[in-house]
Image 1 (cartoon, rainbow, N blue to C red):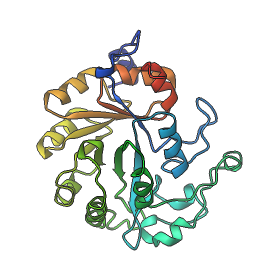
Image 2 (cartoon, rainbow, N blue to C red):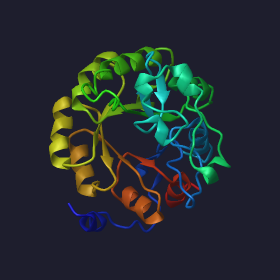
Image 3 (cartoon, helix red, strand yellow):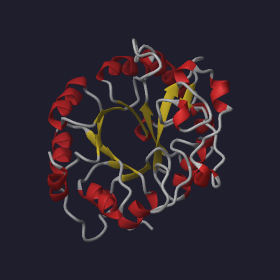
Image 4 (cartoon, rainbow, N blue to C red):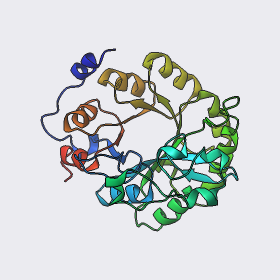
Length: 282
C-alpha cells in the first residue's frame, strides 16, 4: 500500500473522541527520539529522563526497549550497537551490566547540553515506577537480535524471555497494564512459557495481511503496527479477530491525528503533548 493511500484511508477527526473511545497515550521509547523542535527533546530513547518526562507530561504509560547483558541483566537501550548513542562500543549482549551502566549517552554536542543520561536496568525502572500511586502501562519491546553474533543472532532470545519472567514475578504489575512485544514469531513459545499471564504482541512492519494471519495462528493478544501501514480497515480486521491494536510513531500533528483516526487501542507516540491536546486531555 502506498503512503498516499494510507493518508486517504484514515480521515481527519474534527473534534476529540469521547473518553471511552480514546486510545491509550504511550510514550514511544519514553519521550520519543532526539528532535530539535515539535517538541524539543534532548533525551535519548528509553533513557530514564525520557521516560519520566513522558509520564510527567500526562502519558498513560511508556514503551521501552529491552536487551540482555552478557551477565543476563535486562537493560534499557534502543539501538543495536552502543557506539551509536553512547561512549561505548559493541553490543549490550557482549557487555556486563555494570559496564553498560557506567556509559554516558552521547546525543551530540547540542543535545548533550541538556542531558546527562546513562543506560539503566529494567529493574531500576520498575523499582522507581512501582512507587507511583497509579502504575503506568508498560510496553516492553524486546530487542532480541545480537548483531555482534551474526552466526546466531537470536541465540539468547530464550534467555531474555526467562530473565523477564523472573523479574516480573517480583512486582505486582496488573497484567492488563503490561504488553511484551516481539517481531520474531519464533520467540513466542519461550515468552509464553516464561510469562504465562502477560499479554504478548507481535510487531508488524510490512505485509499486514500475512502477519495478521501469523498473529491469529500464534494466539497473541495484540498486534503492534508500524504507523505507515495502519488503517481503520486493518484495525477493524484485527479487532474482529479478538486482537488489541497498537501503533507506533507519530510526531507531527497531522500524523498523530491520522493515527488517532485509525482507532487503535493504544498509540506509542513520539509527541505526547500533541496527542494529549488532540484528544482534548490537555
